[in-house]
Image (cartoon, rainbow, N blue to C red; front, side):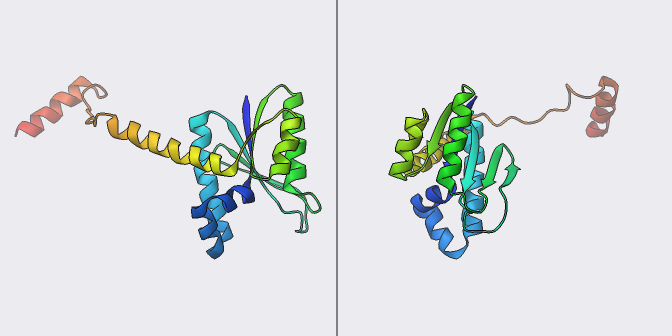
Length: 167
């Protein structure tokens, strides 16, 4: 299995669209990132883990799931970078291919040294936009088919409906 570990706030800051939304509502920016990454995960066939830095907040690690995403808020005293490094170590040791999305240059070097592949936050956002265009194109190219009941209902019932229609 391939994993993509995303530094959530870093990607939000790197996307002009999300950074602007973040000025009004951080929660909305997180939601939009999560929606985009959920679609990306299905398209790219990678398990996506979004890590949000909560090291200045009181409390323990919080993990949740949304569609095909895992969302982790770090616990008090643990930065997103530290948490990402631990995840990379664990997944690489288990034999998985791991990508890390962050624009933090030092973090990119550290995770690369541990065996992960790195992608900048801007590159990831660009990949998401390209994926959305491809999906749109594929959907628009599919012929529009009318649903027909004839193959899925009892022939006797179909005959009765046909009689009613012709009256």
